[in-house]
Length: 457
Image 1 (tube, rainbow, N blue to C red):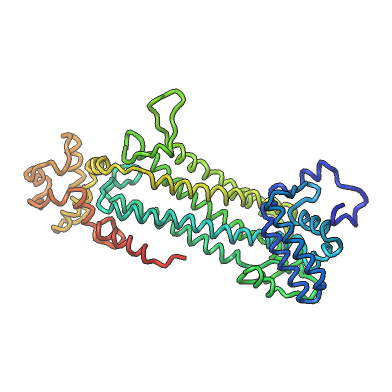
Image 2 (spheres, rainbow, N blue to C red; image 1 turned 135 degrees about the horizontal axis):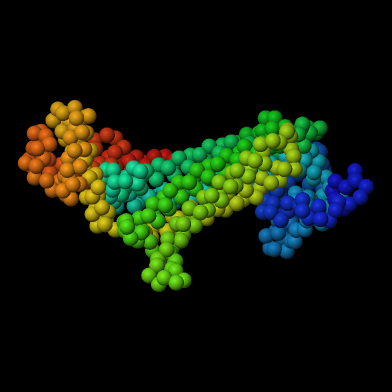
């Protein structure tokens, strides 16, 4: 019999019952549901709402159910609808009348909101831990490549020479912002809804501060209606996950490009590659491609939950049952991608020689040649035009700026002097950048040291 069956004169359709049940996916909240119920039971006895004898039976029964679920000896069925009613039904079956008293002064509305917040708080910690592992790896790699020269790109065209460390530190900063976003999400998730009831509070002298302390919440939801209808914290997690997946996808795109024959900047480890069923020479970057593909999946989770919530009147609506599948999927997908990406990146072989060779092509020292003339007093706009003509000349003659003689260079500007050639090597162009945060070796080392000493949460 349903726990809410008193008002109804006939049973729910079996098809409708099975279709509407959520226990098949929300059963993963069993730990959180039991923890919330134990805290609620302790509060009820503390406030003299239930007896100590009943509370003792309830708490022992809940611990027993927890042990049995984790031992795999509990089977959930659609008849009990969701994890909350499943555990309550099990409890009542095991301890009798006392089990029916547990739901005093609460609703499934505040119960599920509490379970979801408890779950998400824990998962945020796991997510941030995975991001930290990746950031630590990026720092380690960057320290080894401060003088590894590679092309820097805009529009995927050769732009200016940079170090591989500089490129890695750009991603370090991206993932660092991701971690901060998740911490901010944690702060807004750390509010207790339990005690809000269905939407308007409860008619008992409860102690929500006690509940918050028992369940390790920093704050209490201030408005009961908002407490049961709010899913902003959940949306915020999936939004942050989408941004983090976007960063992973961008990095994967570069690894895929760099491992191609046209770039050949890196070689993917065999352990993170696959072959072709017909072409024996192939070594495909499938893991990187899968992460790139799974990014769209997490975006879909975000669109799902935003669409579910966009037209709901206050307070709780059954539509909100659909919040868990996109949340669980985003959590699982992001954590899996972070873990495998970190392993994959650690195994990548960097081909310094090929990067250095590529950094000599594409006239990437053109800006430095213009800066050279500007330092000699030529207005920068004139410098830009002079070097543009110089590049066009080199293209027509199939040569590069640094291979021209001083005499040839001086036909474009008499400001060129004997030191010009040493100023145009890729490493010299890198180190000519003086601004803080630039690709100069000393500036990249500063970035690394700041990152190592930063007190990230």
